[in-house]
Image 1 (cartoon, one colour):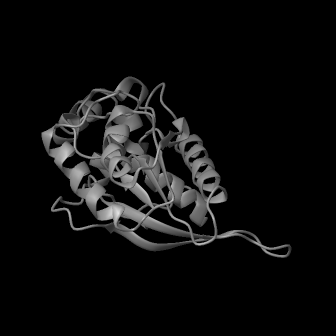
Image 2: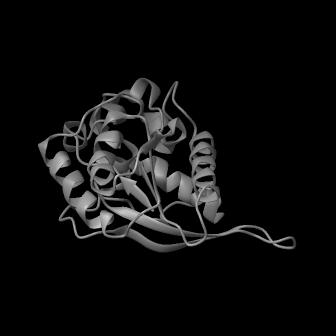
Image 3: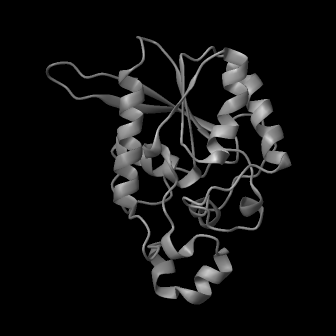
Length: 209
């Protein structure tokens, strides 16, 4: 299960967060508490989180309710926005129009690099689970989408297949290890799930998540 962090002030202001360590706002903390209560009922076996504050604070209520220790994994961090971090969508359009067309932040990470490191974290978490086990991975909007695309085999540059994740909503992936004659299999069971009353963000907003 891939859980996006709760709301921050930069989400509301449509600022590119990337690796900037922005905390949850009051709404985000309430979202994390509610999500924690809902997901604790699923009795997860493990909780793994990005090391950024907005993710660890989202994981904390679930950890408290389940008694599980949160494992930090830097590979679950959001995409680095380079020179875009802290800028609003409008400021990015005005200052970097060419790069904005392809969402290629100067001095930031490429989609391919983010996709592979997040996919590596997903595989690592899956490998550590017992048969039929559940891990909750707390991460970020763009990171989750890119990691999912990589493990699902969606070609780079094919946009729009996976919609965005609202704050404190989640996606559920099922992993089936391959045998001697076939590869591992991933499939989507749920996407942007949960009952939190938050709107689905646009791709522009999610790139700044």
